[in-house]
Image (cartoon, rainbow, N blue to C red; front, side, top):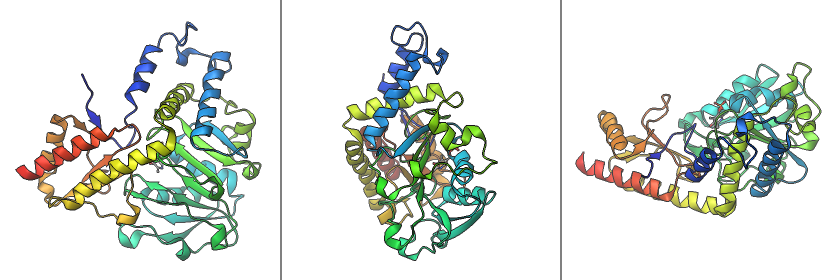
Length: 362
Ligand SMILES: *Cc1c(COP(=O)(O)O)cnc(C)c1O
């Protein structure tokens, strides 16, 4: 029997093949007599899982040699503190506000240095992205922070800003939690990227950090050792016990992504999925999406019913049709369909079919 389609924003759907492999290996990983959760992180079995995961991710995202890949804990929100603890040197940082997540990052960083608002899309209800040429970047900023996919507002950078072309020498810090591995990354424009795993990579509890080596070595003395990127990098993410099961699940996901044709193939699929859903919404009388068409997210599609009194009937009918977790974030209301890598085109087609039938009945 096939499973329902799960549109959760996170923790989110995983590829079914990955879950089946994990289930089959739960009690005995590759004849070792141990499940992955029961292994020493320093044993040869887990080291082989870790090394394959790192190698596959480096290949999938074409991460250059001068970047370290770190597998950490704490999620995206902990990185809002860990990044300034490591990179700010106690000075100024610039933030571009495009929605809830970048706003949270700005607020948290203010505990560790001077966090400035370089631009904000608040006047558009966070339905757009301010043009990089309009950003007020400061000469003394230790970094510039953006959230490249705003999971709640459904806004996505379609290209990374070229800070050097704007006359800014500061490194770009990117929160790519909710679209990592859904499209390629232009590493020439990035100093550091971080993301929680639970949207597009694996279970909650694992955080991915990709950091350019020359940015290491400047952590504040108050930085917890387990969150000091330099120490974590020197110990291949094993300064303390890493989230071993999360790394294993992410590793299975990376292998799955490679078998699908890699990130470029995923991007083409994600474009097709998003186009199917947005085209339907734009052509309907009942549903709307408020985001500027040029920056609509391919991963998180918020939408609203023109008659909000129908919301509960819509969700109940969706659930009965095998379409789960479509309720929008409480801060914006309405609906949200998260269509991450693991959501097949058939799932989006099933959603559109249901939305059309519901509109005809309404
Ligand atoms: C989910 C999310 C976070 C927060 O992640 P946690 O693991 O809950 O800390 C941060 N940034 C973005 C863009 C997210 O989607």
